[in-house]
Image (tube, rainbow, N blue to C red; front, top):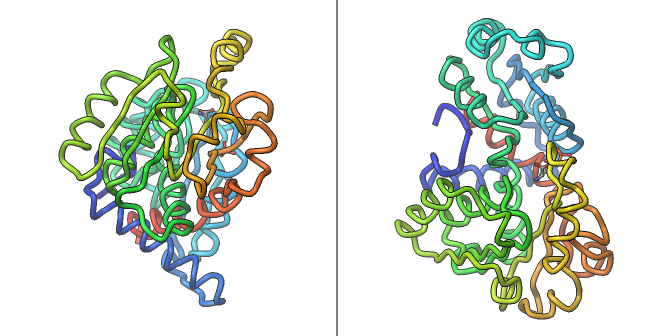
Length: 305
Ligand code: CP
Ligand code: NVA
């Protein structure tokens, strides 16, 4: 494992290993046990999109590991003015021990990882968000005491979150149901890859346009914004089309009584989820946000240690 680009690239054991290490590092942090696993190492963090959780959790995580995080906004580096990914990779690998990148085109992250001799971590592209799903699975494990055999229902846009959720669930034996509307389905290549991953594991994948079918008896209910970064021009249309996919009390009632509600955040109350659900007793969204820190420390320690 040189990079973390997609959970599809990882074996089941690699995914489980990251979750286990994330849980261990969380426990150590809470007990005041220091773990300077990346002492003296530097992580470059390239952002061409906004971020609250990802930026702060990677910066704090790197600091807790004894390393140094370097924030590189695309507005400030030459990549944003047309320097090639190749040249950027070849230069940065001379200074840094790892690169974390959040950007639009997934192919840019793949290229960066191919060109750079140092580890590259995908911190969200238009296609995938693997770090988020590692945190989600860790959170589900903490709340449910197991992963294998659970049912994970994702309701909403067939976006980067839906894609990474499919990949992640397949690797850890979680049954996955995705409900999305006809015109906003998941990427076909990702679906084919995910189907192969599910076929190789113990869990099932259900793709449907019916949110009730997806959420029925779910242990984990998940949604994400209907208007991802870069989709702002489609906002009005999306907010109309996705309304029947809103996670509200009525829809949530079809899940198991003890189901947990998850959302990668940022959330838009009154659109993809109602206030009574995201701020209600089933919601674990802030545990999820916290776990970004712990599991990404596991990713960095594994790749850069
Ligand atoms: N969930 C997530 O990635 O949040 P940010 O966009 O704030 O980093
Ligand atoms: N699907 C969202 C996730 C944000 C963390 C986006 O890409 O904007």
